[in-house]
Image (cartoon, rainbow, N blue to C red; front, side):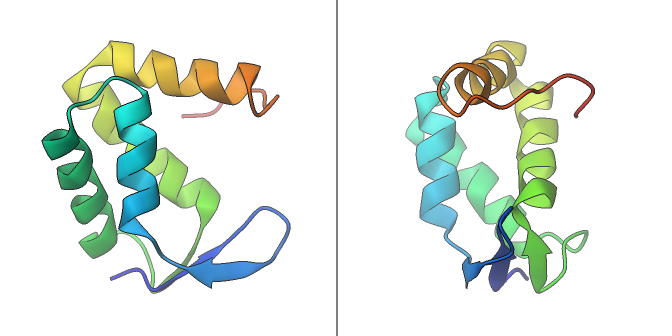
Length: 91
């Protein structure tokens, strides 16, 4: 179960399922689906108690791809346009 997130800049913060759910709803996902994905991530045995934001991102994208490719595309588009991050070559 994730407890701490290590951010890109090395800082740490407590895990927030709410932040994941909010991000998923911004992609067009219904609230119930967004909360389900956030809970899956929180309890995922694939992720450590202290994990990186990049690992969480990858886990979210895998789930979005399984459910609706349009949501995956919207997430990546947001990262590219708003956060000015390249998504080329990343899951």
